[in-house]
Image (cartoon, rainbow, N blue to C red; front, side, top):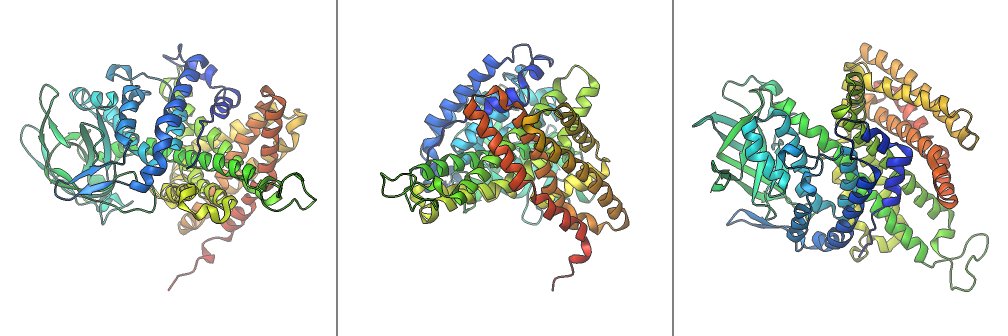
Length: 589
């Protein structure tokens, strides 16, 4: 059995002290009431729900898993999941950040991201059931008609229905241009959707009254490739004119996947056999609507990495404090006990500090990105909205790709601290390692995030968001040039930011000469960008630590110094790999 306590103090520090969220949020349109008092109250309630309801179902839910009934093509979720979902819905959490006109509370995305971390740390597998609903709501709000919003969006916001994204097919993973699902015109403006989708999270379950699938398919006159994709609303149960549920639609789960992790989440094969569906958005423009969901989902997956790393840290730190084994190299520290605890070992402290640096740096980066989405959507000044939009576009692949990769390292270090006991299922920490394996894959692998960052956000968009980010770092360094307590960090941050910009320019020139250089450098460029971004977040955290108690301030400064001295130098390796070029990647036979 593993422990979990919502890290409210660390969340508050990141939101208010590091990022100045209260001042920024209350200055936005409709933000008058988004004060610290309100945000704190929501965080505390989220913590209670996660600690008391979600966290206790995590281990048992993993052990029990989901059950698929072939005869009825239905899925039964683990014990306690249904009750947890009802508590979540009754508490209004499904509509926390959704617009008031659809029944939501219109609270900031930054707060939604903070609560999302808390819920996902409580039980990641459970959190996937309501998670995709948020992306579906976003797509419906932007691309749906008024009638579609009334019919489908409001029940999802209320927590009575859930939503999915149905993109992947057996022959079409990241290359959606290969998908074969068909949409034939039907009656009264409807379409008959036929095809098979795989890896559909929460495609079938027993938690909600209805499931609304957003499905990518091809119209009969669709051009080949990704330009011929349209998006359709396909409900599990058809919806009557008065909003009540009608007959079962011709869509069902053909199976659920047997996975190494997130076993309490139903990952389904979905069969559409002439199911009734309705076009959302314009014909052949489904890819744009899909990316509306995908960007939100990618940020959410980054939060999953943070959530798993946070819970792994809490448990490995607790274990290191309690486990008595061997003596300190410099002599006994607890002579009245049969052995010292693990904390006296420098390598154990290295692993714990690595986890802490990853967790707290990632939290600041993810909340910073979420805060930019709030500014993008509700700032009074158009130029400010555009800048935030460009920052978000630049940061999403870093937030998803880098944080999920670092979650692998963080959960691995937690397992190492437990030693052989970590490999035993009863102790619970091995589940974090298994659960973390998927997050680098779904919503786009690390390679896809890297290609998006370098190929699109840097080269195609001429690094618009990157330039804003570098400018912000430069301004921060100038502002704190005289801050003696963090002077070494500011010096290193200035050097890495300058090198980042120069390296990016040289790489862009190489790619112009040989497009293969993009693929050869992309993942190392993502890592370099991630470590540099976290350095900025840690420098900001160190600068803000003066608001804390003496002990907490010292802990922040110690971890910041650890990051800059022990983790940031990894950029040297990635820079060397980037400069090695595509010629070091010969054909493999």
